[in-house]
Length: 203
Image 1: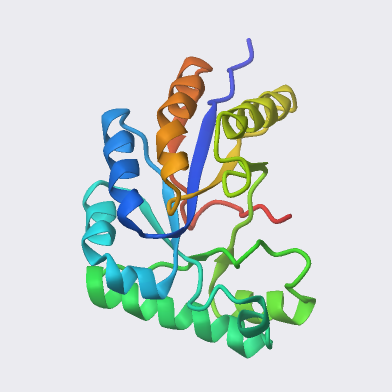
Image 2: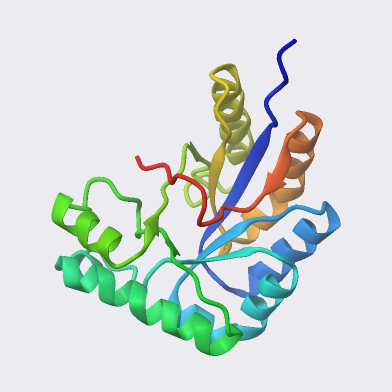
């Protein structure tokens, strides 16, 4: 008799926190879902209460850098590490919590050179991309739901757990999040957060 593999979906949110984050946290709390937030340093300073609430409600804090500028962030391997370091310090100052989970702006392709990846790894960071892209920044309507469901079903056929990319700066993402949560729960997924013990996926 074979044991059925646990179905887990990982919701990840980039570019926050913002005022929209509070709505997202309300929905996650309602559906008892955990998530991971890859955050920008300036917005962490602007919305510290959102970050503190993430900690209180058991979500994972992640690093997304400072500038979100391709030319500045990817200027060198040092700029990449420095932006993560600065964001990490700000999170620790506000929450008392440390984190090594990180996601680069726009993902690791094509900008993260081999030397950059090595520097990030040697600095103790775990770099995460995704395998489901909502394109919520582009399709600010039900098309984001369609894209997510299509990709989740494709991954399910290959027995892979989805790591879903969304953004917590968009009202539309919050508008459609409940539909996405209900879909995942009905499909039998448990909604969990990324942890340092997991092997990251890269594009």
